[in-house]
Image (cartoon, rainbow, N blue to C red; front, side, top):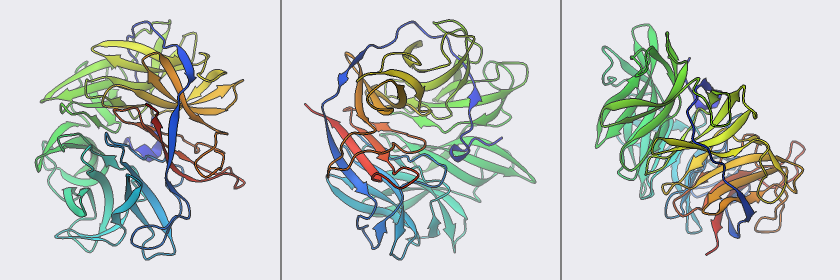
Length: 420
């Protein structure tokens, strides 16, 4: 089964974790800034409407200098959707539907893949459909008003005999400009999944469906990749055969290893059963993930793996910063280049039913929550149906808000920056 973010596939895995849960701390003094809101004027014409596609999380990454990239549908303009970047209070268009890419064709939509990646130098990577050209889909990189193709459908798939790239998704970029992404590869009438890496204009295979897995069995499917400054690529994968049913893997310099495997014991008893399809990866190699547990005192927790020593960040039932106790976690924890981890969580018996949390030196910090007042005076009604956050090296956290089902509350993307 293909691992696509919009299908919210979760595969089995687990890991041997070291003991240790972070303590909670008070609310974090933060400066909230509005990145964009529904009804704002969009560069190039029209107004911003929605910031995600139906039933998909809103992914708005923030980089080291505080830029935020985001997808939006548009109203009252010549294009229906586009990708944009907010930087120092100013929004610029990265790519709009209908834009022409020289030698490729016109960009004909982003709604199937509304999750851009963002480099520290402001490069935005994204997947888009193409019309009027030699390919129907591609991964692109945009910087300074220039859009260039990274990989296109119809090209030869590296490392896959007689394989042709048919679909592309979930690009991630590091500080060196390397881009890792998911690909669907066709061989005759068959399709297979693969993870590919683009480095200095050259494509190479990281791993493909059917390849042997380090702990035995063969790879059956992949989660979206994460890539750090050192060129390490982390991803979750499902495994077929007489081996572990899944795991978290790291590839670097042609070497592939499993760092966590399904069925391993947890430090609180029981075993890990499942994990989030999307992982966070810091420049130092720390991996953040959401794990579901079996035969353990709690059903789920947020974890990190650092230097081969896993530990618990937060688990269900723990005291939440700002009051109450964690009752659920967002499935996609984020980690910044420096190792700060941020995630969304539901809280019982607290002042806010849903909050965003970030790790700090003295424990967990509450960044923002439902009911808080935003710039302009509106109060947060929801943190979207599937809340996803991003965090940068300085601890700034980007997040999206949305109205309730009956239309109460604002809609937009915001940035919480820790006060000095």
